[in-house]
Length: 219
Image (cartoon, rainbow, N blue to C red):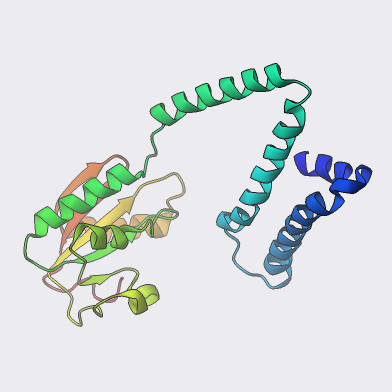
């Protein structure tokens, strides 16, 4: 509705046509581009593609507030004050089931458990499997010798992945409602070789005995 309002505003106010028309063009180009890519070329669509529109949305909101402030200054200040107050409370109370604090705690537990030994890393879960775990190990000062993202991101590493699989394998298990039969099959395989496990929020971390190399090629 906000975009429709600004299209109308652009048409009816000649002096604002260019300044409002350019953001509207970006909105239209993004919308049709994503649809053409997904429908015509059968490309994979992800919600972060819409991040392109964040600056446009913020500009339009700012323009709306600026325009209304001259007519209704008291009302705008009160509404903005209430909005800020409620959002401050939300920020203080919010907790993500797979949040940064839990991820860092899981990474630190793995590093502490391995000591000086090398380890490999896997992550399973239908939606949260990538989650930037390997990058967090880099930040904490100890990277896995092999990991589930090596096929995609080896070119970014300072050192190439090890050729041999370490005997210690750690698996980040991301339980969620979309888990399917493939997930449970792999989860059961890991459980059979589990040495230890612990939970950080909704993240389960499993320490797997990979000394017999049962899991070569699975990550």
